Amino acid sequence: MVESKRNIPFANLKPVNGMIREDLIACFADTLDKEWFIGGEKVKEFEDKFAKYCNAKYCVGVGNGLESIELALLGYGIGPGDEVIVCSHTFIASALAISKTGATPIFVEPDLDYCLIDPTKIEEKITPNTKAIIAVQLYGQCCDMDYINNLAKKYNLKVIEDAAQAHGAKYKDRIVGSLADVAAFSFYPGKNLGALGDAGAIVTNDEVLANKVREIANYGAFVRYHHNVKGTNSRLDEMQAGFLSLKLDHLDEVNNYRRMVAQKYSDGIKNESIILPKVAPTNEHIWHLYTIRTEERDLLIKYLNENGIGTNVHYPIPIHKQQAYSEYNDLYLPNAEQIASTTLSIPMYYGMEDEDISYVIEKLNNYDMEKEKEKAKVLINKI
Image 1 (cartoon, rainbow, N blue to C red):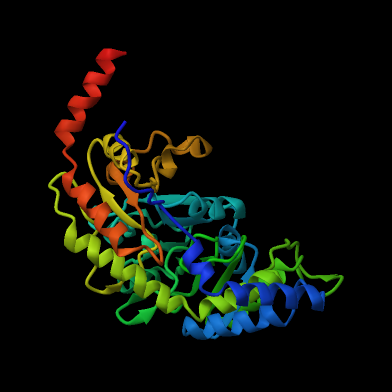
Image 2: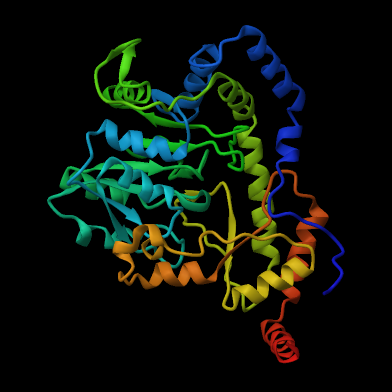
């Protein structure tokens, strides 16, 4: 094995949390001392700030990203017998949220340019049972929202942004959270706006929906012990809300830094065996992930790891091929399957040093797929 000159992780949260470390500690102490841990002033402050940031009227903090999508669907009364359209290339939470309501996910292919739902393939999937379209704003950029919204209007469907990876992204100068009927967010620690644990929210201009989500998420009650519906427990806690309020003040700075890293990658990586990510001309990408594509992905992973560069794969098995969705396993979606077998995420985080960025670029440019194939053959023969 080649001795690595550096150790560059795929992700590193120390810089982004470190820049406000003392503020985070003070927030923890303040919450601890006040002994109000659920539904207090910090939750209200964050909900107001995040709604304003997203150019929306309402924000409801919830337990996590999966539940934010589920609660948005439930808030619109979607359940058994209904169908919801979603891209086949996404994290499984996008589909699980549909299944948890009792509705049926209907998978649509991604396009190969942006790895987002192909809007031209949605209409053929619409039936009388279709109630909503989930637009997954994957990797940090937006779907073709005008096309999707116009299609939804034609068929009287709801549109839900799965914005778990797109905090602060823009489409035609309009920010995520204001592009559909409702947006569902995750604040998992690794997100561009990440809590220090699980957290989520829905953002909307629909007051009725916001109130319904708040009711369902609080055991089906607005008033304690007065339960109007069979709800659940999915609430943003006071501690995480406080952390998120502090971090929201720096989100644009974080996103701009990630854009700088991405620009250096896109300008510097020049290797015919590597396909670089594309940005739609309508989009302002926030680069939650910088995801390349290549044949013989395992060889590139091994090569990068040998050189001290961390990687991740988002996502190696399409949802329709997962055991959890075995009823869809015979479905053939070639674009989703091609992306799943070739995609590779390389290091991307706030605070990544210039010399580390240059090192990643250098190693990717020096990568010789045919040479690595030969090395693999030699190794197999020795075994």
